[in-house]
Length: 558
Image 1: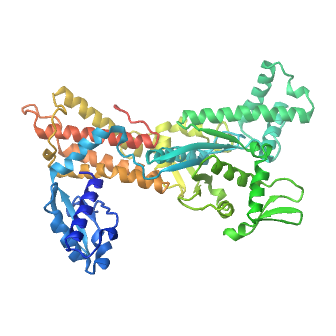
Image 2: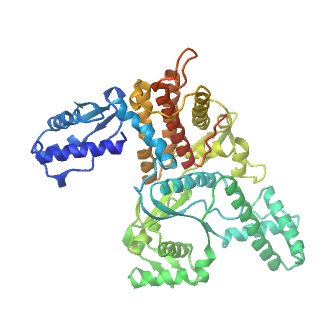
Image 3: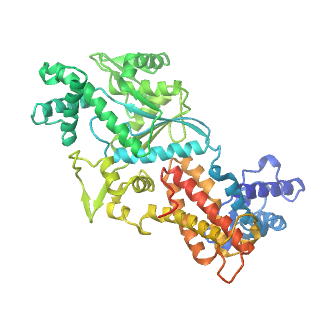
């Protein structure tokens, strides 16, 4: 019996009690029934607080209502016992056969187990969006891992997701980048505010080589403005190709690469400002054009056109948000670094000025991530050999591999600063979380292979044979997977899946030590052995489904 099936059973019992007058409620007063695992499994497999929710409306106390519910549940098929505890919780223990049916459900649904339609709608998810002035640094790597996992979670719960990368190929940072390339090509030091690192020399050399291949003049023979433009255009293309390649190697692909200058060339900025002016939210003052964002929760109004007629950076944000909504996004989620916390007020205000909602789960939602620090041999790692002053995606992958890097970056809440111990992540011990989970998956596969060699198959399934306490405990964890996925998607917290997988791995390892799938040499295979092969293989499936949501492989051997 799945949690959903148990919830439906409790609902039907409540409706019957309301219909025959045992409970003074009408059917339309009944809430959605939810069940959850008790913290202490000695109390049962599942618990519900629905009696506490309804007691006041029913004109009784929670324990009396809970007793009515428990007495009726206790006589239903698949229920071993139902008791009232504390202020009115109803604790439920499933019969072994009913509980064991979950293994059949998981293996029948396969890759679909855990998926749902709890979060429908079109989502535009923008993440990474690093400027093409250098390799992706650790903050961007964290967003690559978390953003891709969040996209997978949203898709698994009914959303249509567009993964989008905002490509900023204009502005002062790009100017400094091209100046740095030109200086290195000349053999000169980069400007004080320029970009360092060996990669600048590599890109500058590649620009000259590409010009020669294309039959174009060596940019160093051109005037300085002409040369800088060549280094800008070609250097940005080279750098962005490297970024895309590194992300692809990390398992992260995007559906849309949106160029910032498109907003200005197409007149999207002017049109967005005109729309807000028509709505009465734009005014002119001191030669500049302003949006009344303070009317919508911002701490002050914001300039969109400066007094010299140039568009402010915020103008691009305004047009870009409108563009995403007009492309069909119900929810626009933007993942930003810790240094962007001050943007929330103006961005949410801007969305509200368009008549939209802003905040968690609304039309506009911003997620702010904190920094990542690396430690090796107990000391902070601060410098990259290639990038000079930052640690890059490639540095992290070279040190620990894609799986360990992705898992480690996802398993903690993004609103906390993350410290990664490279020695731990490279180790093959149970202290390494990704190894612990992947080893559990590999062990389930080993058990299945061993069972096949001993003639234990899944031809017959007697779920009632799953009668060991460890069977019940493992089934209880497996049953939580769909709710975990739905919560992780709804709260935008992929780390919930990682922590769940660690709990499942721990439960499986305990189960492995207390039960047997293959008979001993002097035994014949029994219903218990066969049923536990079903349970073993159901665990394989859930571990694989969960790791896939994190973009981490599920090895069959380790």
